[in-house]
Image (cartoon, rainbow, N blue to C red; front, side):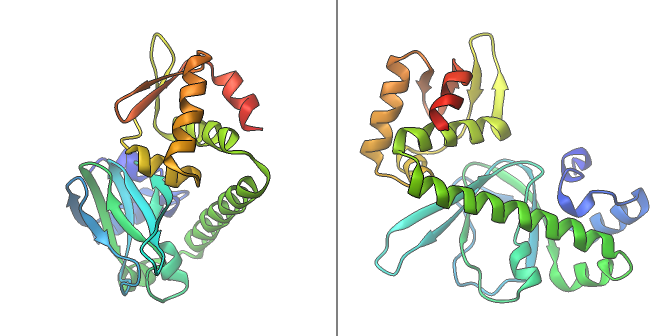
Length: 225
């Protein structure tokens, strides 16, 4: 296991080496292929997950079959903690965007490990609060921000977690299809593609296969406001 990546997860923040080793000894390694479903919306929860490498997309499906992409998570990020605090069916599905490696922690074993470590629960609550803030921000953007602004904001968010500096700009290998990127923005594929084409024409971005190179981050920031 790449412990440097795993130790970035909220579960391990402030945890001493002995406690971290004890937790990792409980972990189960999960290997996923591109497009493989880890769990589906409505499934009974049993485990919390930390991503070691790769990307996982979280999404929901409406009763009429429409899909909505809620988030794309990468190395060091954690998911499944909501059901740990509030047992109930999974509220979203989790699917591998590409090949991914995770560690899975059984809820019951996690409860036992956390018993003498209440500070870990505080870290998890902080992580949930951050996720709630992001959800509130995304909801506000849907109401108050136009589609190009949301596209710019989404690109910047992806760059923050998956961006890699190159000679020409900030390369974001998001691995998403055009439809998935549109779902993440919360708009139609046609409208999102139009915004991306406009950004490219202005020289702010260069579009590539399942990735985008951000050439003018400052202008994207201004457009996202």
